[in-house]
Image (cartoon, rainbow, N blue to C red):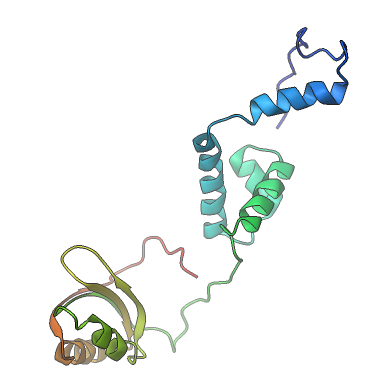
Length: 182
């Protein structure tokens, strides 16, 4: 992608009058770096989204998709890694026959002050993939993976029998439309 030609230097940008060329460029660079932080955030989010979709994409491929120079992508990646926004790259494994099954999100409502004990009991379930405390109708949202609907039914019964659990509401996952988890 070619860059537009640089406009002719104005008197303020022309080296001389006691300033070197590097000082003139510093002044120009300082003005261009004064962009609002929101203007830089969008390309970073776009870069992160591309990496979440394909962590193996080369910097040249990422640059083409973003419409920027490859060196810009390299610099953005280095900055995102140094600041801890990107902490690693990973591989997602395909679902093999041992990992097939059914997933369900389960909203769990608990009695006041019973949360700690309920979380301890839930953490003992090997089918529990994630557990988050949430705002709204439920106190916790669990993601379960079971080998069959029969096992899922048993799990839901076990969760409902935990002391302190008031109610559960489950939603079975029919299909994943977007999966950026690693």
